[in-house]
Image (cartoon, rainbow, N blue to C red; front, side, top):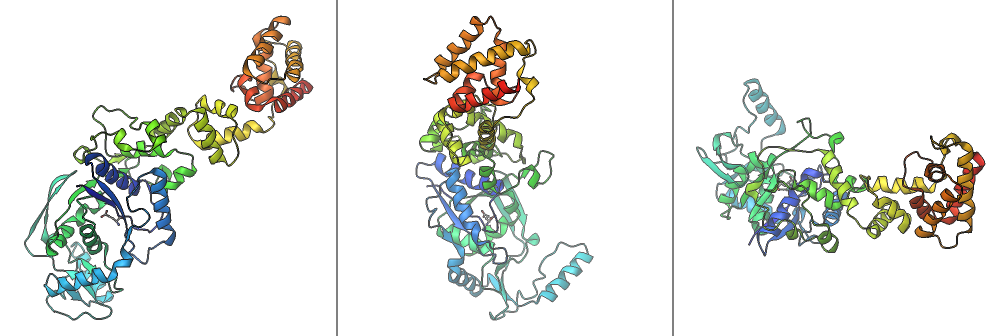
Length: 471
Ligand code: GLU
């Protein structure tokens, strides 16, 4: 049975890179094994960077995206397990696989300075390694990295990687505040949670030999590792806020759909063999986001790219536009009403269904703007092939008939336009154009009939009358 996990550190809002790790771990568990399980663990051992709100944001983001860990509401939390890590660390000391170190900050700084001067990589000089110091306040515990060892890793993404123990620091496993470091805690917890596959960002690859050694020292079954490629900006550099390295929930605020983000994130490092880009079945998504429906057994870690992934917001926009366009009028009505915090009508949602919107923000703004009395230059009311006189005839005939219309429906409205054109020997431009401008104040907009339906009788008549006054 496959068991994967997402193990965020609550030090701020999770960003795309963090959530991509969660998503890949989720997809791997859910699409490759019938009984696969995906779990959450909160790695809050860094007290200085701890952010209380962050845990809630992480859970909310996972829920919103439906990357649902089985233990979402009761995740493993490292700060609740301190005695366990301490016991493990003490056991390692007892077995001489770790040691107590009481080097002062000043001494360590001095060592680092000397190494820097000699252009050597910064490493602990193993001063306390064989001193058998007792554990006292202010001391730390360090791993005793074995000498002359080659540590081998068969990474599921990166392939075979070897590390020389000479290059590995005697890593601190328990800090002076009694908290474990990430290195010790996550190894202990991955074992406790029976994690089979550790799927995480590439930044952890260089620490993996320490983790392999810790597993060995503790007699655990070492999990398999998969290190996901880094995510770069379109220019090839580190992702900045401007490129989109913002908290994942910012995308919700910006009006992106969860399925568009999921689709986008899957492609940050993975691609289907047939190169198709739309990977999510929206009907399934709407019913229940069952990802096995769109990736039947296809999500293999071997297919994850080694090369860096490129974050291109244009792609996300493209997916969001498509997914919005695929929504039904009813879904758009609900989505935009929720999003904009005002009730959108079905005929307004019909205007949205025409497409051309990238985000829910654009949709909500469009409706808000539509509801405001438009401002325009009176000359705009006259179509370029028309005259003010004909425009007036057309507009006032439409105005009179619309005011008398009882059933505000498409067929009846259409009949009025047809009648006004033929009975007054006008062209379509003499009639449709001014009504459209009167209603929208724009040179380009949906047809007057769609606008009339969206705005309703009262508001439409008011706008047309105002236009007649302007003419
Ligand atoms: N807490 C680590 C992080 O947030 C987890 C790394 C791992 O998955 O092992 O990056």
